[in-house]
Image (cartoon, rainbow, N blue to C red; front, side, top):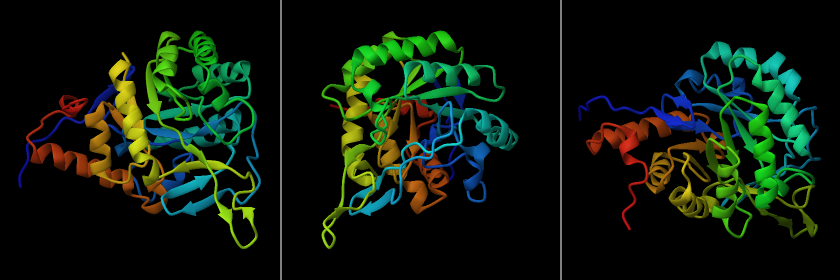
Length: 307
């Protein structure tokens, strides 16, 4: 079937993406690892592994366990720190032509601010994703994402510290995700991404010990997709800023469900570990769907769920 060209570009809080397919932080390294499989410049954006002010060793191994419904991880936000990222990883990404979004986190509000400050003056970065949702660290992270007042205070301070567009990544481990949404929106967020992983565990019945050294970890993959889809729909109904859908997106069908629910873009995570070309397959599938259904512009599909 011959199709007319379709328009795939979307704008996420001031970041112009050539298409809505992004990579999820922590599942795509710093981009270089996937270059043999994926045209980095073909992606809507790369969201790099979470970056902190100082390097972090992460949690002790074992840190990843495969479950029947997906993957449990307790990496603990291992990373090389913001200075080495700027000096060692960013130049390659810039040369690749990728649209670069840096996921940042800290153990205090001041640390978040300082990382944002360092990146604010760095060439080649299109935006920041603020991680207030990681369940695998003892301090910071999800603490900010489960308290609307702390979330507001954090995002407000970062907003004052950088001119870069801010995407705030929300945790599903809350009672009412729309309350957190309103808080970060009021504080100056330009977009929202959700969901991060859901806290879970696995046990070795032979040894009667946890399979993860950290005991619990974050569950991702197909098992969390219905939860993520429901939360994206809830958030998209109240948010006045763009929403990015994340959670168990394994193929184009999954991605289209999120877009119809209200997501302006999507991030692919666990699927990258199974098929390193998953993002490219999803992009092709979205383009084919639009062509097959006579939809000339992806933007006209966003939030078209019929109730």
